[in-house]
Image 1 (cartoon, rainbow, N blue to C red):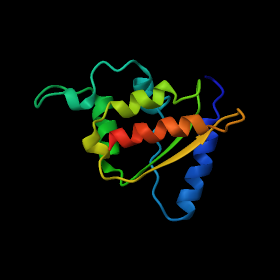
Image 2: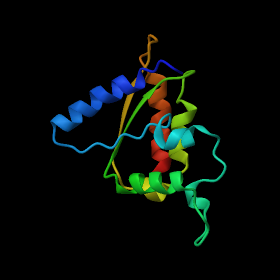
Image 3: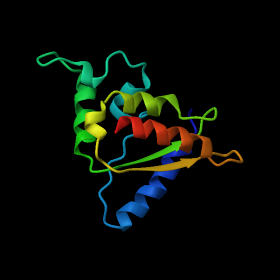
Length: 130
């Protein structure tokens, strides 16, 4: 989509977190690594064997995911669930990168339910990741 609410909502949430002294690293599947994570996943990071060449965008994002102490997912509701770009990006990395790290959910929608269905879907998705 050319007009996105996500960056505005994420900027608001990011500002509130920074006011509290937290460091924020925003990972947006639409813009990260020139849209690499918007393409259909061919091979996730955790399927590469030792010595096998891993694409640069995947290596760089894996390092950022690994460095995070916690995750706050800010997402719209699309078709009563999560947007495919978000799940595609997060699914590139196995549960070992997410395990034992707290996560938070911030959903939004122009609809009357305000993203509630995406929040329910995201809760189970994050639980499966770790």
